[in-house]
Length: 350
Ligand SMILES: C[S@@+](CC[C@H](N)C(=O)[O-])C[C@H]1O[C@@H](n2cnc3c(N)ncnc32)[C@H](O)[C@@H]1O
Image 1 (tube, helix red, strand yellow):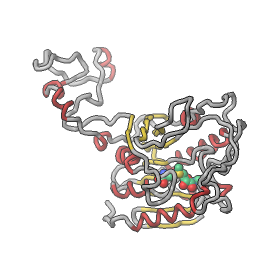
Image 2 (cartoon, helix red, strand yellow):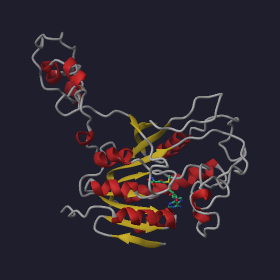
Image 3 (cartoon, protein in one colour):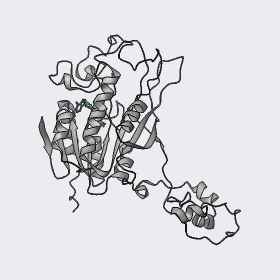
Image 4 (cartoon, protein in one colour):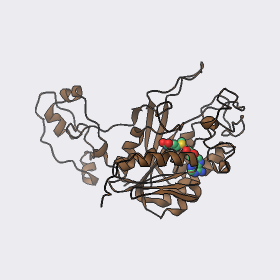
């Protein structure tokens, strides 16, 4: 639809991601980091918006949403570099009877329209699911994308440390979402060094220095004892396999460099009240920091085709990565503009 903002670091396109992605050249993006609208979860645009019918997430059936997402990811595959990564933050949903929202938020002005405009009855849910079943939406999408040629390389559990309580008595309350990383090849960029976490002092004290530095995948030495065997360089390929030695690309104890952050991330949501932009699904910046650092090199380009308030752009720019944002909702694009103005001006890397 339109170029809403552009400077050396940031390009903001306002419109339907399905149209705007066509403006982005092939193999020009290092990493896509995004949270698409979940199926029938909430509606972002006002009911009278002329763009309402372009809003993703309002498809009458889950399978319709799935097909839309697979098609968009097909376009993301075109714009990604071969070594690039696609990160999707996804929530889940239970099969439930619907009905129009009639609570006290239903008639309010401003962001009151950000309640589900269409809520399904049992029709529209994946075939065969009984009432109260968890849909497993992220995994259904993951399987569809794997069948479409993507490699599912990481599954992160985002534990929301400040998750709101739910009024349910017959199941556990949901405190997580998943972050899935898909790649186009097994040799995708992944800069683990940039996202290592420091070891705790207790962990460092537990590990003997010689053991930390000489571990080779064989039996551990007793604490305090020197290594029993001289450490041969690790062997890979057929020679290594024949000798029963596994190549370790990652030593489990690397005290100086820090540890692999693992796939459970404990991060508070940026829930209202607390974020300034009155958006119900705003990313906490910490959630996108690791994906951007690990899979987009400095000076590279990160894309968020469902940008909301533009958190991905702000974090990418602060880490010296360029960003392209696409967003359908003009109100959210305005939030991005406000955020852009607050950014420090930094020289663009060569
Ligand atoms: C889950 S929110 C993203 C929030 C964002 N991560 C942030 O930090 O603010 C999804 C966004 O997708 C937008 N959206 C819905 N349909 C779209 C479409 N067809 N094209 C582009 N954006 C769309 C919604 O307006 C909403 O802002």
